[in-house]
Image 1 (tube, rainbow, N blue to C red):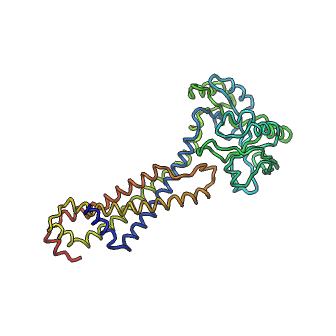
Image 2: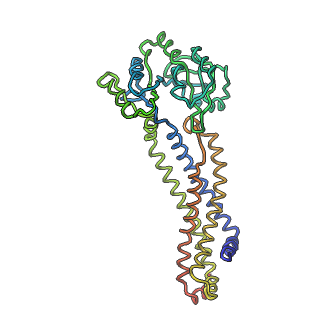
Image 3: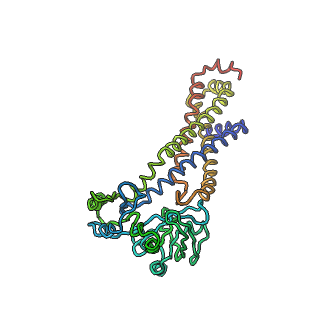
Length: 386
């Protein structure tokens, strides 16, 4: 108990210097936490992808379409419970910066294949009946102020022209990991117009999503699907939704590696900031430590004085930094595009890592002062002039 009292008294002997040190630690911890949040939020989005859904696309590239006839062949593959064909639509809503995924789909099966997107039975019936009806996610509905009954006008780019979509439903997310930024409309609406304006592009689909039967092996079903189209003009590649999403992550591998490296650099900066403060404090107290040795204090007790002060200072800075982190994540979460980060949150692992890092950094920062103090002879310490 006496050691703890001495630690806290020493902590505020130089209030300005120590406060600035803790503030520096707090800023570094909040920056570290923000970078870690970017990584954990991205990983959470990847983990939310289902492993019981398969994505079947053109083997050469995702951008090439598949013949409509592939749909029925995939549907009758052993192990497939339900399928939905989709087309990437693109387009511009008011401004090119207003980006969110817009896709043509099959209204009859889309919400069976994606049960995490939830709408009412009446809304589903309306979606099936009205050719230009569309369903949007609650995240973009909130972002753009969409309401049921509104007409969304989109200027086509992949499919030129002006397209009017009537919002018949706003789907709810099943849980916080569900993407709320999608927009779906009837594939027939797209295809009928293509038959009139661009017949050569009609009766094509972008990719097929297959929901597997319970107990079906994803690898076996994938091979069964792809084998049907082997040596055809449009061979396919089938993989789980999670693997499909992770293939896109590989394109950003260098960015995420840089983010991880930066977070480690921040921890090193914290170490240098705190280490500098502890070295200065130990030098100033050289004669005090010599006097304590004279009074019978052991080297272990002096080590606890120094290490305890460093750890407490680091932990206090970490606590302030964590509080700042929640505020920063809230602000960034409002600004970051929802389609890239459907969820943006501070994970428990980030808080635990920050706390453990604070303890480790405190211990490391106190090593040099501790070694110097324990080696110091009493006579030399009493003669020391700071």
